Image (cartoon, rainbow, N blue to C red; front, side, top):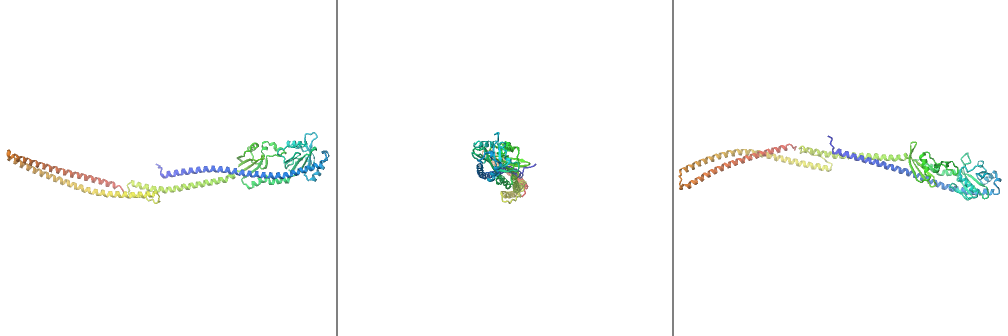
Length: 523
């Protein structure tokens, strides 16, 4: 039968508790690590996004400052061109005249824009650049065409947020790519000025490649590149225009020049991301999501900015979570090792306690079997040590008590046997003496009775002898009484000695049984 010992119960319960603790600790630690990873990833994404946003703000501020200076020059150039052309109408102005003015002022090009003969369009009619002649903004921007129409009517233009500079008679575009040039990508600064009383717009433009390159080098692209180089977790950064994702046709327009990816790269795009961006035109909530792209686990964040764009960050989730998971695994393994070590230490400690308990149990079992010499040896200074010493002292005292009892029992046995023998002899002697005394007493009684009978026979019945006869009868009675008394005394003494003999025999039997029981103990 498999008994549940104290040792087995203790080890089993301790093991269950330690396993439960390790399981709960592991689960809580994993939950904590997952929450920490989530917080760390989101914090990192916010830091990168805020850095890019600050970079964009700084660049935009610098770019606006530069463009403001250029816009002031463009206004000055436009008024100077108007002064140089004020004595001529549109038909009198030639392309050569425009080239001379271009060279004098130092422009990259100069175009005059006017209505077509049927009035249904506004196009470039005179220009230093052949590609500019016949170019119409109508097919690229309806709002731009409407402002050209207003300027030609001496009306103030209407801002749609795209223009870098605007007055009642002039508008200036941000540095942008030339739509009339189909070859190399060239960036120019365009201004459109209308001199009151004329039927054309003066369109001076200067090449701004260097300015554009400068803003690119110190602008968002530079910030994005620097951030990716300095942060190993960043996979992609981009500044996106959600309006284009909501209405892809906006990317086909030149004015204003809109595109999905304003800065950076957006290669990890999926249909969910496109829907998310389309919905961010009207929403300013920060969108965070985890996903996979070509087997790579990513954390994406879309952060709306004040100007309507969205900063997109893609972080390598596995790269960021890996060290934390490793750290968590190390902690869990370390915890398990600690728990196992604790279990082994507890088991070893309890084994020592259990060994001491076993010693005391074995001692008690030997005592149960009658071994009054059994002792336990526990020297650990604990309560079990005290119990062992107390038990040993108790055994010593019990041993001494039984030995003393045995000694007294032996004495009792010896004396009872002597008493029994003496009592037996006394009974015999008393029996003989009582028999002899009784016989003598009866013989004497018989003789006395015979004598008294003889005396009575001699004496005659007379009043004189009646007194003597009465005395003789009294003497007869006394003799009978004494004889009976002797007989009774003899019988009583005989019975007493017989009783004493029986009691001594019983005492001998008791002492023998006591010695027999004591002999079962090991002393």
